[in-house]
Length: 395
Image (cartoon, rainbow, N blue to C red; front, side, top):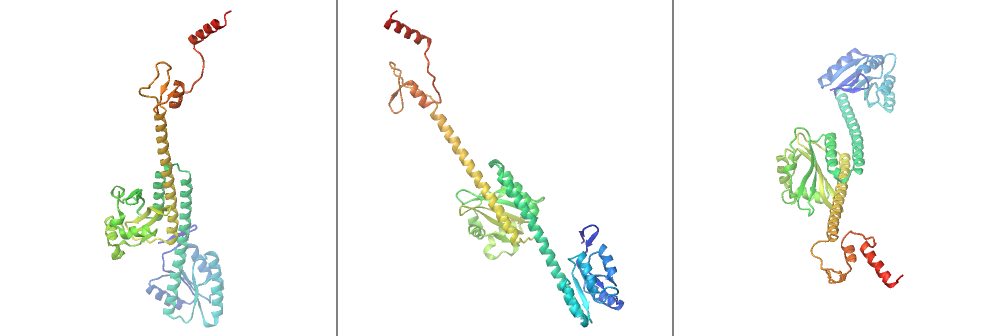
């Protein structure tokens, strides 16, 4: 399978070797030997031909003779490394040219092999070179993937800062979807422990297309009873990493049977903790292939677990405060509502409270309702007051 580099350039499938030598017999022998060993071969007799070939096709390795017409192998290797720094080169040299070969290695040539060629030695050097190149490419791929995943986690973290409590559930499900798609798993989920810590629910879940959801089947589970090996590690705040469920040891036989019943081939479970207690776990399943997680990805998923835990605790706290507020408002409304029969003195019009004390009606209403008073005098009372004044102070 080919990979694009830049415009029309491609890296061909593994095992393609460019042999550079102006000796026809050597080219024929080397071509035959390499093809028998399973490699595909292309040939070039000089530096100009090498550079033209590299414009169209990039091999996995270049086997280059030091003695070439017009320009030596060291000069050609320098041009190749300037254009394509990642392609490995093995230099073929005579005993008298070993010093030049060492100089070539300083500028990035992988190794050198002396002529006359020992076939076994050459094949071993080629194999070792290609294996190293594969490792370099894999490390680079993982480095890039880790960087992309870090950016995704940063985006998720920033998003959660601005979520209201009623948006947290949907936020967790969206994050599980993004992480599941990025990592290529079949199922991602967050289990949450009950308040007493004895039961656990599959509260949030995302499944890849074609994978059966398990949310409805995983409610009120007691992991300590049926999955003690799994539960013990989570309660010790340990990451449970199972690259192959079929390889679980006998002490995890219950877990092996349980996971296989759900078509789980590989899984990763990361404990979610708060205040020194387990509150749930973040999980990822691979149902269609075995999967091994790198330490870097596991560490970042631990950060996701912390994000989810803090968000859920914030939601729980805000909901508890709202419930208490509603209770207080209901109690206050009940206290401030006048109802039932009120004992009023027929003579002085005072009211007796529930403790047996008599209060002015104005004072009682003020203490038992939201009513406020403004003071004035009605027309009838004003007329009576004027009559009393006229009687006391006659004109």
